Length: 83
Image (cartoon, rainbow, N blue to C red):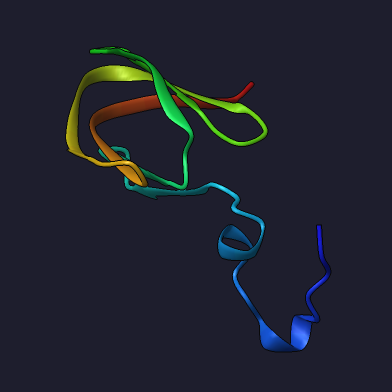
C-alpha cells in the first residue's frame, strides 16, 4: 500500500478501494465497490465487501440497479450490520 498526502484530498473509496455505502431514508441503500452479492432474499441481503460482509435486514427488498460496481436495493430497511 502506498501513502497519499492528505493535501490532495483523494476520496478513500477511490484510493483504498473501500466500499461506499449510502442510504436514502429507510427505503433504499446503495453500495459501490463491492466484491459480490452473497445472498438476496426479500427480507435479507448479504454483500461481500473488501474487508467485511455487509448484512441488511428488512422487508420487501428488490434490486433496483445492479452492475459490477454498484448495487441499489429498495425496500424497508430495519437493520444494517458489518460482519
